[in-house]
Image 1 (cartoon, rainbow, N blue to C red):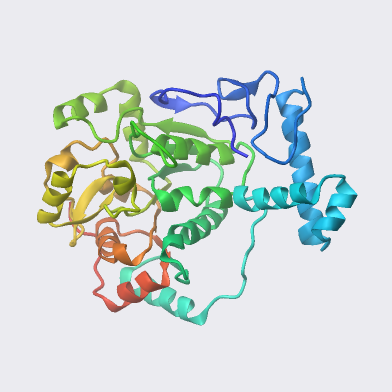
Image 2: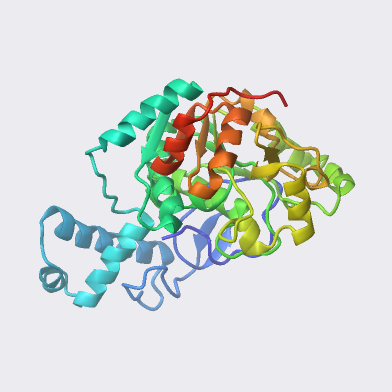
Amino acid sequence: MERCTRGLSGTCPAGRLGRTGSQGTGRVVNGMGHGMAKATNSPDLEFEAGEPALAARDRADHMKTRVCWLYYMEGKTQDDIAHIVGISRSKVLRILSLARADGSVQVTVTARLSRCRELEGRLERRFGLTTAIVVPAPQNPADVSQIIGRRLGGYLSRRIRSGMTVGLGWGNTLTASLPSVERREPSGVSVISMLGGLTKVDRVNPCDFAWRFANRLSAECYMIAAPVFAPDAAVGRSLMDHGGIAEVFDRARRLDLAVVSVGNWEAESLFGQYGLLGDEEIASLERAGAVGNVLCRFIDADGRVIDHPVNDRVLAIHPADLRGAKEVVLASGGESKIAAIRAALRLLGPNVLITDSIVAEHLASGPADGPQPE
């Protein structure tokens, strides 16, 4: 279940949001859910009329945990569980599906494919990586973001420690990591969204993604409360001078961990889904040599941010500023992004790369290049 994602409207305020609060529906004040629950994010339990939101959430969580334990740990059938718990078999099935979707139950395959292990070693040596993680390319190429995202979530759950400041990019791959990020109690972690937001959203918004990520860590969250693309460069510069936004940019230059992906303008990308750029702008970027983008700034095959009016309008942390981060994680895959990922490796010089086996094969066979000058 998502915490405090229902009942909020409008854009996120500039600067700091407090630690996100309880799950469930209802009025949200200072990040905490109050009032009486009218519904639940889970389709499996009906809350009693007048039941406090926190009690209803705890009851739902208890039921989900019990059902999952019986199924995965004790090997009970769905019919057995329905009889033991006193609910219908269809509700048992829905609870199990929900638990997989929200990360309550995670499946780990401990055996590793030897070819992926070999590719990881080659990538680490070729690009000077501390860690390379290569996942088998899925049978359906459309699933690559989900597969890489799950591995990313597991990696971040192990890597993020108390007191760390974590900067986040955006995209389908990073959003897919959320169910695999383990929930934890407050530990002084700060999360920073490194991009502005979208004026039209469906599944992914940088502001919303960072907030949901922070919620799983019980962390405070800093956001750039402005559109990711300003109308023109002058407006963009004015917005960056705003006190709250300037604070976010300053914090992003002192990250313990930066997590980014690589984007392009294919139909399945966010640029394609939301029409962030016009056809002429995309054609102009291609003529200028753009092969993809990092934090919405378009780069060429050599890993350089190209000189283009679109880049001048971006309200996001500049990729060059990530060199000050103690660790940079690049998570991206898909055959259509091979050139863009190679360029991002040259630009960022990341410590960690998480990708699929098809991309890894191409990267391991190509030239080894370190970070390029800005």
